Image (tube, rainbow over all chains, first blue to last red; front, side):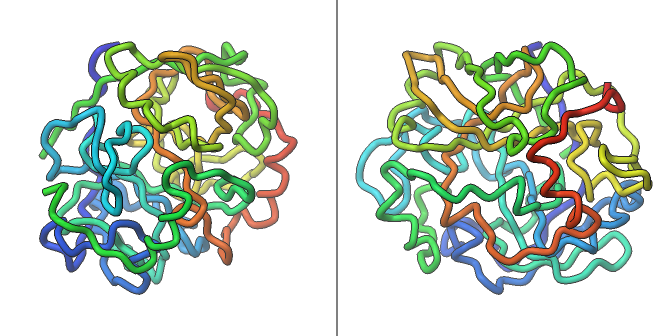
Length: 160
Length: 160
């Protein structure tokens, strides 16, 4: 299989018109409001979604062109393998964010904790389920000392 | 943007030759060994990955053809919106699993807790970071009573 073809199912609307100054992870975007426009032909798939407090969004990093297998991540000064980072410039630039669901009105989902650029094409919505998605005991490699800082840090321009 | 084109970066090897009898989530696949063949041209991107105990895998549900916006999920008898489920037949059939990393040898990653069919095309590897990916207080809608059962249940054939 050489090519896998997906099509956007919607668009993510946020206050961030560019990657600069954007929170670099949802945990650092606490309270940032935005909304998801799911294209109307998919609205039937939203049944029962309103029972979940958190959703996993998969989306296409449409601002990213090309990639490197080694990158200097934000908050770091060392070249790391791209698969040891969450950098948007990846071989397949798929983004993953967990957001809080506020409410759903027809094909619009109002959400919080967005770390996503305005206009980003949405690929999938999955329910976040703590029993499936949480892991209690983990090691975070080079990120272990830096991870807590995600809650406050903002992006710089290295991923523009 | 109409089409988004990705290419597999590797192949996931597991003991499960078909979806039937497969654990339906990694939490139900505790201890299931498998390995990821990352195509050699991406091996440089694995630098520093060995410091992480858990990885997020994104992959293409290559056995899924077509989709419905409403599905009867495993362990349920009610039609649910597909975006309120983790069913593989989705508008964009992208799978998401958190697995335990055992070791890396060159371009092979040995992992545990796989709920993935053998031969699945890999799209991305991201480091799992508890501070980014865990959520402590969540509501799980229709899944709230059923979620704990993921730890023991096996799939039936409804997603073949």
